[in-house]
Amino acid sequence: MAKAPFTAPTKEQIEKAYDCAKAQYKVLGIDTDKAIATLQATPISLHCWQGDDVKGFEVHEGEVSGGGIMAIGNYPGPAMNADMLRKDAEKALSLIPGTKRFNLHAIYAETDGKVVDRDAIAPKHFTKWMKWSKANKVALDFNPTFFAHPKANSGYTLSNPDPEIRKFWINHDKACRRIAEAFGKNQGCPAVVNHWMPDGAKDQPIDRLTPRKLMAQSLDEIFVEKVNPKYCKDAVESKLFGLGSEDYVVGSHEFFMGYAMTHKDIMVCLDMGHFHPTENIYDKISSILNFKKELLLHVSRGIRWDSDHVVILNDDLRCLFQQVVRGNFLKSVNIALDFFDASINRIAAWVIGTRATQKAILAALLEPSKLMADYEAANDGAVKLALLEELKTYPLGAVWNMFCLSQGVPAGAAWLNDMIDYDRKVIKKR
Image (cartoon, rainbow, N blue to C red; front, side):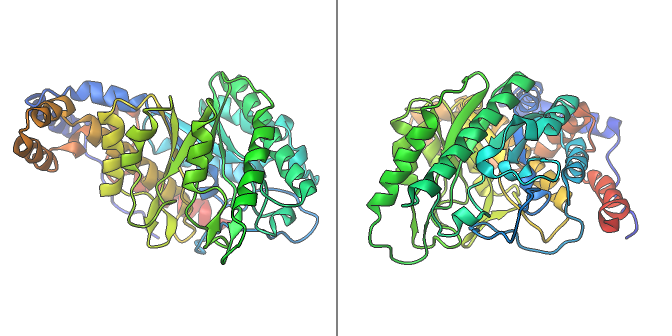
């Protein structure tokens, strides 16, 4: 593939367009410099599993099953080991402005070729990741892995009726929280641990209560082991349905909402694709943050039943961050990406999704929220609606390009040149 001629606007062009945009937004009382500074300070956690199709680098004794999660596609060149994944992540990070984090799953441990089962993983198995984190100034987040394991074959982990299997997964989760605490100490800020498990049934289970009682008991046993909140923060993630749990998910929205609300230090995780296809999460944010100090957002994109498409700047994403910014919740939400597309260049997927998320945040920061709220309070809904419509054609792109320029990353579509070059010289040669 020949290198595409995606020419970046010059510094002078960006600055000239930005000056015009700045003046236009100023009329509405918006400080574009402040919006850029706020966006720069807002971290987004990129998910490691986009880089290798959720396979991980675990060493197994035999065949692995017990799924509930799957990446679709066969684009060449997924990362085949942790060094490849780190190199790919570095390329993606170099094309994304602002503050980034990196989100690991337990199956990305490095055990030097030894079989280490999940209840025995420890911080030492993530030593290289912690060194990489410091070298690249990218904080780490973490996730237990409750799938792709023989002890997940039944479809039940923390809610499994077998106490021995349940204990295995409890010990795995405890180990993961200790690993996250080590991450936090290494990076000087908390690692967010997201607890999601695919427990559920494909069709018409009779007893829906017992698994939920067992799940709650397991979680209580996990969280009774204290970790330093300066270094580790916990969230629980619900799902409407999954592969093999189409009819019944133990950790439903109602279950985990109830659990988080009755456990002071546990956050709710809202995944954009884990609800009914016609249901959006943006209206849930102000409800939850009336009662909780923080929440975790998993930024994804659902198409029909599948929730894990690459994020784009669509209405769902805009509405999500409008509610975050309008409620002054940016410091109360932890933003993480959660999609995995194996049908396109995986590095491009990271960059497209992260930059789209940042554009949605920037668009919300460039709203005259107080002005519109004042009109709304004065029962002047027509003015509010008119302003919302006018803002759709305001020069967001000019402010975005200035943000990219200030962060030393390619503006416009020019980042595609680097991606295509890396695809040709590295990815396609694997």
